[in-house]
Length: 398
Image 1 (cartoon, rainbow, N blue to C red):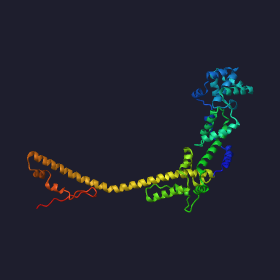
Image 2 (cartoon, rainbow, N blue to C red):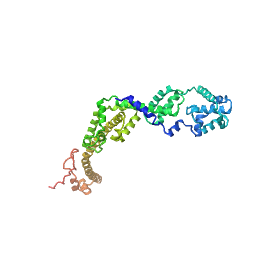
Image 3 (cartoon, rainbow, N blue to C red):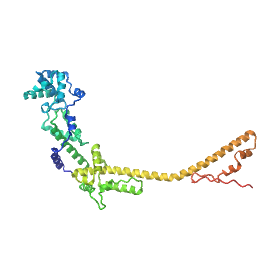
Image 4 (spheres, rainbow, N blue to C red):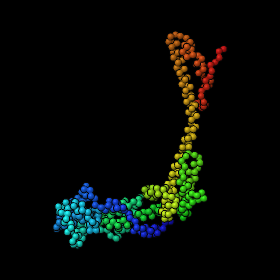
């Protein structure tokens, strides 16, 4: 069984050492776009917004309010804790008709900035994130990380969950820490989904896949050697491997307990990882990866065995059918020659009847009695008798 407490503690220790997002990911999620079309879409002020802004006294307060309003909407931070890009200041200043330089005079009194922020949050019906929101952020990250380890989808899941509750974003660093913890939580759930039903004996059987045997290879390496040539020995080899996999006792439908994308990720990792590398993983990760590989191997072995059997049966039919095809071709040629004689004989008889001539003389002249008699079969051909049709020699006179 998985020691979840140990895994959770390990994940927390690593949280401070690893980043969830790259610099590009942070810019994509937390940055202010520079494209004019994106600025128009995200930051165009409504009539109600303009009324709120114009209620402030002085250009500095109006521009400061406009910028705070923009940042609260996207990316969703309080502007007091963020650097404001110059292109956003210019875009907001142009909408309310004040110079961008006016922002330099905004914020000389912290009470004014904080008061404006509280008023805007009340207008937008949002609130700042709190310490008590951290666990729900981790859960949102775990849900987003169920199919993937990639940082942007996980962070996006947290952001979407906060926005759905009308909560402003925390600092990027805090959001990333929640994402890393949620990713660890999702991995633990994956481990549990594949391993919790296995007994200690079966878990030990998974570990044994990485032990080098007397033949100098590990069972995992032996299992990966899937023959493709359609031979009886290869079919037996596939069946032996299939029985070996099934002996571990992992249900094939266990894969349905894990997100398909996550399962495929585990399989890909297991396929390319050596036994030595897998041996360096934590026990839970190693066993989960091996379990996914074995479930995938079972399906591949079944497909390979069926395909090989199909190819062998098809080959036997082909080899068995070739002699019959040769016999049929020979018979076709003989029957063709016979039909030519037959048509010439009918034509001669028809001409004799029309001209009032002797029928036998007409056939002898047009076809030749000797040739016609040689074409007579010795015995009626049987469709079940292989070989060419045997034709009799002409009868002797007498």
